[in-house]
Amino acid sequence: MRVLILGGTTEASAIARALAGDVRFAPVLSLAGRTRAPAAPPIPWRIGGFGGVAGLAAYLRQEGVAALIDATHPFAARMKQNAVQAAAEADVPRVTVLRPAWQPEAGDRWIAAATMADAFAALGPTPRRVFLTVGQKELSPFHGPHRYLVRSVDPPAILPPNATLITARGPFAAAAEQALLVAHGIEIVVSKNAGGSATEGKLTAARALGLPVVMVARPAPPEGPLVPDAAAALAWLEHQRARRGV
Image (cartoon, rainbow, N blue to C red; front, side, top):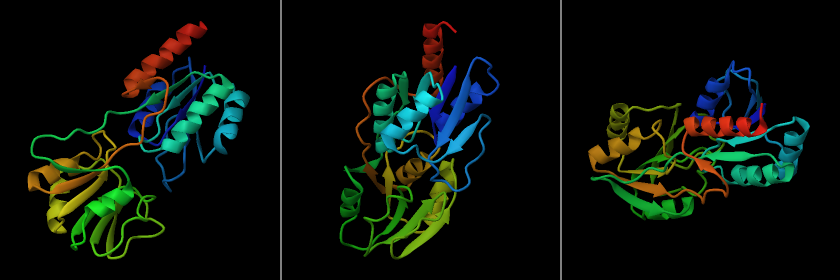
């Protein structure tokens, strides 16, 4: 049974590892190519886009894909919508893996923001030291008068002014995150509500230090079936296989 996994997340990697060597399935992991040197998965994989909805639908048909698992990042709204439309056009069953969003806990000082522009506005006019962890593609709204500590897997094409860059790949432990915030004199954190444990340490650290966090809300989830993790996606895949009688 041919399976296409749209990946780039912890969940996609877990699904790939689970399917590696399982002769009942012929999985392919697709990565968008935003990370320059991704870790090689244990199953066949490809890098790059498909050419929009039409290109993805054509790939699904040409490759005889029988199930599509969308395990892209919670903020990959365009790719998720493309998957919805392409799967419908190609008549391929699809499921979206959407990990639970983070929720504020006692002691958190979250400031809600709907967009990156709102997040910048929430920083206010007074210069502050900002830990900016929103991904390399989301930096353009951020500019003066603040000083930024930017963390990214790869160096961004353009950095905000007055920015210090750290290139690193998670997971990040809470203790190390707290030490980082203290060392750089961080006064406020800006984050996407990505969910998951790999980057949650910064929230624990901010809570311990009493720092505010500007939390950018997720885009609306796509229509259709949603599962919270890799295990649920694999259970869905087993159900699809049983329905096909293979």
